[in-house]
Image 1 (cartoon, rainbow, N blue to C red):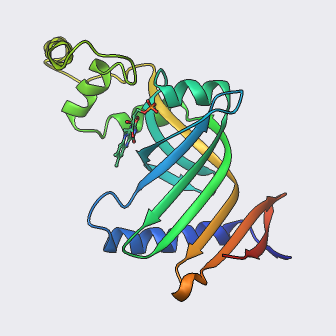
Image 2: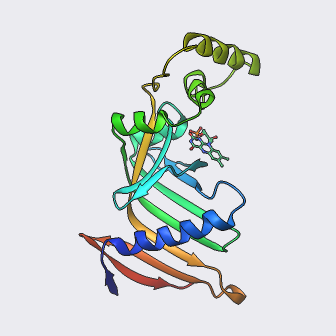
Length: 196
Ligand SMILES: Cc1cc2nc3c(=O)[nH]c(=O)nc-3n(C[C@H](O)[C@H](O)[C@H](O)COP(=O)(O)O)c2cc1C
């Protein structure tokens, strides 16, 4: 097996991510996020990547949502990007930590005002009586914060996935695809090819 310096898979991610931004019609930063209960029952949904670097991959959500609860009780996740326009996928697995309040505040302040109101009004993943109840909650929050800055809801924040494994998959003819897997090894990575 080969070894690689820490920045190598992140450079590769950046290169592919940049290409996806140019070629995908929308939401090139959308990825499937898999979480699991402590006894191993999985669940998956799409979220948006909002920040990334050598310290990990960040998305934002409601900590009281299903994914939030699963990550608070089992801090491991897997993420999957599939860009049809590039015929490439990236799989990432790792442990998860919460972003700092300062980091979450900074991101929340960049969101459109209506999205900020929505973050307060939505009890994400919990049963809803009807759309009208939700609209009433939105109107109430909008009136409460009619003027001035809207603070971040305390349970609305981010998670950072710290990669232990990153796999880059490229489509090839006749399903003879290329797979290159990086596995965290101290301050660097070991690298291997996998059969398609
Ligand atoms: C393209 C796309 C992007 C999404 N981005 C987010 C996101 O960044 N954060 C989020 O909480 N939900 C996002 N959602 C909604 C989630 O897929 C999901 O419905 C919601 O978070 C509740 O998931 P849960 O019940 O498993 O916690 C997105 C959905 C789609 C289709």
